[in-house]
Length: 323
Length: 229
Ligand SMILES: [Fe+2]
Image (cartoon, rainbow over all chains, first blue to last red; front, side, top):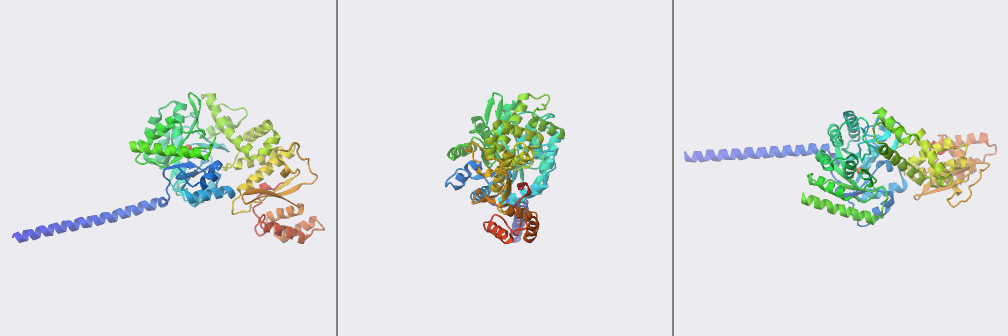
């Protein structure tokens, strides 16, 4: 009887092991299927994903940057509006940049909540351009860029209300689906609250991200600039954002025009409170997204930009280590 | 939101702005100032000679009028001065032909510089002044010519250059640009010039083609905005 009982116990144990092995096999197979399905959803995420700190490619220093041996930039950002359909010198610089770094494309004229219909011809050209640039996502600003038939070549705040949320979300969804790329929208600097506004800006941004099912390009300097211009707490603003949706961060310098008015110039070094806000934000995030330094006016020699990139890199490392 | 866009356009671009109610005027002025400065800067930097000879005041007046009446329509930043120059051609040509031509010539240089690599960069300009000889060191400006000159403006080795061509060659290029074949173009010119030297013109065209300035088989890229008379 004892032998039978032992045999039964062994048989039970073997059956248990076989079941466990089968479950593991199923689990492995299921995981593989899930990974495959996930990979199919994000086909372009395979190689050359931007990370670390990067710089906006400006003609003033592009030639020097693409040919320098050592740089602190680990990716570069361009505006398709400056390169699309363009040959010659610019095309060569872009080709050299693409050889060297991951390139991120950041639109300037998306007019993501505007009244004018989406420009399908432009979007078709843009889609090809983004494919050629091998990008992982596309970003543009959550603002007006076009005003009743005029291309302003600037970023104008939207009225913060539900109607604008719906309008922006619908257009972002359309653009995102047409481009077949994840899209990130950027919070913009603002100088007045548009008529009809009835939401906090951070709630507006979060609502658009949620409703459009898109990502966020979080511009830390813009948050700080607006916190002074409208007198709110920048950290509370960050607290209200869906930080898990942040694909990229922008950081830049600004100009203090008066006690309660900052202008987002991208023409100076990053101010200390903006570094602090960056650090605060990074400590709340699970991983550090790629961080881009924007320098678009009053552009110093490349060596100074490199120094600022180095400062930024160290700051990011320290913030993250502390987190 | 459509109404708000129109109100913002009026606020930003009208010479006598229509201020929004309930918002501090100095904040509204920030948008106006930033947008204007950005547009003025790119136009002045890419049409420097026109700006120099027109003088700051007149040139800024022209930009302000353009912004109020029309403004930029395209997304490409470098196209802003090109669009403005096209507007100048239509709006100041009667009282200031020289500066309109100079703006056009500078704009065509931008077009040639940025033309896609897949197309020839060549643009044709027809001018009653020797705009290609003007520099900011000129103390006097060229006088009006009796007959127009024909300039091909093109890019070679990332540098913009120009080449003066003969009127008949320019006319031939214009016919080709319209889509006519070489034979059709020469036939139609023969109707204008009894003594047309077809062999000479064909050789001139072959020379331009050989230098990569024009393509005989394909008639692009002389976009129509680049050709005026
Ligand atoms: Fe930004």
